Length: 392
View (cartoon, one colour):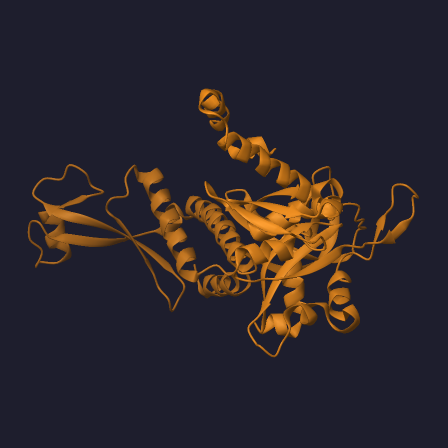
């Protein structure tokens, strides 16, 4: 051990982010372990490190006794007095041991211990680095593909972009630069896993924060996002400044802000019908958020008109939305998409009813309430069924 050891410690600390104290502790443990293997015990061993010279000293401590039973732990009074006449029974004397006798074994052990600590600490450093970026957008490079993931290089780690986290139909090639949303960072014994997404609703929110100054500074707040990636998104917004109109700010003049957000998606995807690459188009509906839940649901069902919103007395998060007969299909949307997005946006379970359906449902309930007494038992059996079952 020498000043070269100090230099090695400095390099490990600066380049590998391994604390010098951890390395010194690892070497001490290794020396003690090597001493134990050589002499069968290490209770009496003390390891010290000289910060100036970079040397490790190994000492054994022996107790002064009348009769010696273990020469590694004890020393006779006669031998102790030969060293110094002041020693008495019960005193403890330190003896420096030759490190070279077991140093080679200790060096191997120390190397293994240091490597393990280095891996553990580098894993911790990597985890902390990317944990800070959780729930943020990062830019990376597409590195490779397998059946489960696209691996995106974020700098010091390959993040995993699963199929469900990709925008449907979006196509990438190796070395493409893409933006991804970091939604989960895990630290486990095998390493750090970073999971990223381009289909996550928060991806839209973060893009708007990047591209629209009023969203970034908090003047306009994005309250919720519902998304079916690659097809349609609903965004609920409100303004904290009476002079700033929330929807107009998000859309921008001539749709400029929305276009900037959409341009952040990969510019083209493969159309399976034509076999050609076409631009990715994801419609973004911007909805006015309001505190009144009925009005918020009314806004969320847009572009369909709403006649009324009726809340379920037995379930505070369920609502029936009544729309004109000729707006029913528009309110429900293609494959139920419009009402599904509205439900995610508002946090309500929403049942869409046409005006005629709702009127028939009310008439049925009214007739049940007005039924003659002799039919009461039959009506009561039906009434045991939930009102919503009857409505359906």
